[in-house]
Length: 132
Figure 1 (tube, rainbow, N blue to C red):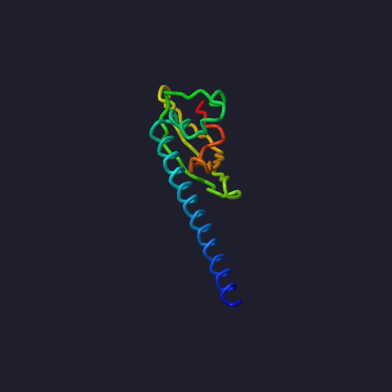
Figure 2 (cartoon, rainbow, N blue to C red):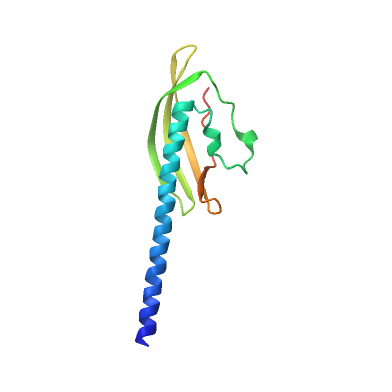
């Protein structure tokens, strides 16, 4: 009887450790994705931010992207915050310059990220920032 109880306790501990490792890997994957997204927005002026969207989402939802801007600052002001195992939110403030007029503008990017278990990848489910 003692062996069965010890085996059951060991099995529960092992399952808990696996789940924690899975959560840790998912969290690291989110951090990597968010850093890559920030770099993409900063250095491509948002033109390639759409590649982070889920390919299954309607691409017509993506706003028109401008080619005449330069992102000057990207600051995460809130998050990332996990909302369950497969959903995260983050808010960033992006400053950019309209190259033709040299006017500095600022937008708030409210990001919602969803985890796809099949692809083991985070996808942006909210809109990409629209620079006006």
